[in-house]
Image (tube, rainbow, N blue to C red; front, side, top):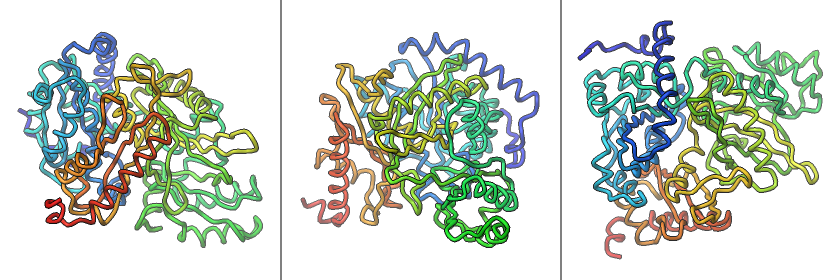
Length: 521
């Protein structure tokens, strides 16, 4: 066993030419075996799930209960419905057994005991605020246990929330390919790279400038943007690797002087940007801008405005597939923080969003991108028509990934690209309303067992016979942070939203009841 523990600098250092070549070989091996293995659900395979948020940790720290976001990929436990599939799930700290039982009971047609025998849960027993993959890399014995849990690396792969140099390094230690984007191509998923992909694909996007590295660049870009659009009232400054809108900041241009006096006016106001992330300061934002870069673009106005997204996948052989469209539910100071989503996107434009997403995906596939990714838009109604502007690409799993996978696994249905709807095996449409941000002081102290009890007593669960109901996630964040995720599935948007609002009413009522009173009811 190799007991050498790499330090943080070694883990984050760019891959050497030899490492890049070894990783390319693993990915090519995966492409060769992909079709045979993935086309037959009964073939043996192993899936290593590493739900590490290997993004900027200072930005991540601004998100309430972010440590528990490692639970968002627990939806992939439903892969255990394939009878010869083994799942290895690694987390920073152990997951409550009741949460695991909850997911296994959602499995259609598979006894829980059979599934549990093919599930290996491993933990670093480390709640420190660093990326999970860093923790794994610093534990050689844990890496050995992962290797021992995989009987055949030729029919195994890793799946991750995002793929950074850390995940590539782990893949090389384990001799496993990753179903995800090579980190060498990660630029195309930054805010700057996204704008370039949109230009190459011929997709409209907001006026702006990319590859900005410091406040001087930002101020220069704002001057040029104002010159191009003299009537512009607001602009957005975005960090290249912001997450869920947390790296965005709004600049109010009301009262801005003419071009000759504009530069000093802007420099004086940049330290007072309206940051979306709670607790963000100009000093931190400026530091992040220097380390990761950023963009400036117009804030798109509109009285009727939506934020749809398209989710796509490029398989290891380069084939592009549309997975879904959503309307994002946004909040925060200026409506740029991801709170949840509605599936599918609204009928008047869902196929337009699907088509524009496909255009961008084909460009990305040509650059060698594989795996799931999302493309976000701003859509403004102008008369009877909609104008769509692409704003970013997320080369990772996102807030719309796990709700759709829950729907797919729970119903055994399929996405119909002709209509943009999801259809059950019986051909019935299904919609959902999902959120990662059900959060209230009332919910603090509720344990996973409490939630399951509340769910059963109030009929808040998924009904397989009807293909409707409620499924929870982020359950581990409930007691400490009063935070929870939910996917409400119904035959129509109205039915799904009614389930969501009923869930909130029940949780609000139950969360205000003391444990002693609850036990007597």
